[in-house]
Image 1 (tube, rainbow, N blue to C red):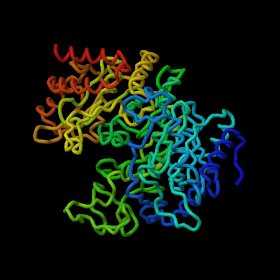
Image 2 (cartoon, rainbow, N blue to C red; image 1 turned 30 degrees about the vertical axis):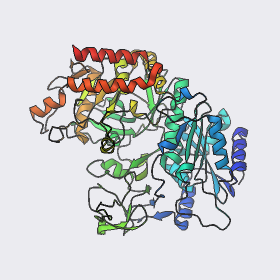
Image 3 (cartoon, rainbow, N blue to C red; image 1 turned 180 degrees about the horizontal axis):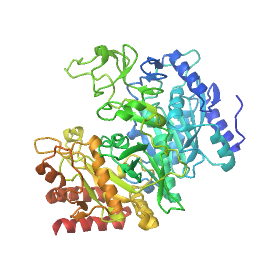
Length: 607
């Protein structure tokens, strides 16, 4: 087909990549339903996709990846900045010229026997002043259909590129050329040593090779929306953050907008789609994963958009009890990867809230599977991979906010940070100031996982702003950018809070019920923003005065509430020691304001 654009820069780039990768044909994507249906049928016919039961799961499909290609590959993900020191200690760095030479050899002829798809997409509502236009070139039809859901794929993007002559180029290949007559595998990919997910921040360029899975291949997601966007945001004076966005509306109709950063396994999607238990208060979802924020010239506040158009959610653990809205989002028109396909062609995964219908089906490795079956060592065989996913359209979420696609974004009132701590950190505390809030986000921590403990790693895992794997430049410069944004915002800066839903008693009982009850904590934050409730000053921040965070109807004893609200100074002193060791790795790039906050915290703990 002839190219549906007049933009010479884009035409030249597509021609250059085609000459290097030698696809059998080039298809320009338009984002239409016809295109989606055609590619899905192509994959069903080839055996790559499984059409699910039309009555139980309308217009939905399941895929099983290669067992070697099941998650983001951090060890093969690179920030190829011109100077090594600009990548910083949290990133893998390779010289950009050296990396390009290596990858060009891999790309040479890599699309032989395949189609190269040209995907024009916008991250954010098309034409929004906060959105970015991009093109992904890929030889994977699985990537195309997922991008249909996760981004805004449209020829309108080509019109905008023709006007601005600007786009972010993203190149992807599964790295599995086909010889003439060779039958394709169900999930083509390259071996681990040939996988590369490369980011060139100065050029705003992404090259990915060898993986067909998730964030390695859907390049609009973590690669563009966080790693490249964070570098671009630093240079242009805005913010690209690993944050959910929600609207919390009070009974009088007053709207508050919250952006929250949590590391993995800390209930981020659950909070984004929260079912409020506070009478008259309502939560609506704007985004479950990423926030792009710019200062609005009219309001002076940070306005945020969700750059994505869908949810790429972890399936295991998603249930009617934990997140009914996420479950409803993937009830139709969804893509499932590495879950169980039941005998009647529905889907199932561990911790879905009920046993697998008929006791089994086909597991994520495409083998016959029975729930409860064990391997030779007596270990239970999982039907769904722990990182199995659903790709669901955001507009299918029953609590999606009516303004989720407002091109101007929504004004952010509150930032929330958190981690997973069974001790020490109380349920909620507020920062003394925005700078103190930046420090809280920079030192957000979780306890080591069971796997880490088995390896003898007993120190806390620090994850600044939940961005450790996603910063496109030096983490110290990244922290400084937060302080710089605070200076620009002045008194219009969001209020900052830190939460910990995961406190336990010494005998392992949860102190806080979590889930929908977390809305009580959000209400206290909104009341603080309004000045409706006071707070008591502690060594770590401002905390609720007894009675001002509503506990009506909850079965929490006075003893448990006291434990939830206690400031464990000895525990915090141990945290402070871990914190200092962690921050030392940033050397002279650590912002002076972070060091000042460390000293101030230490002085308050010792007072």
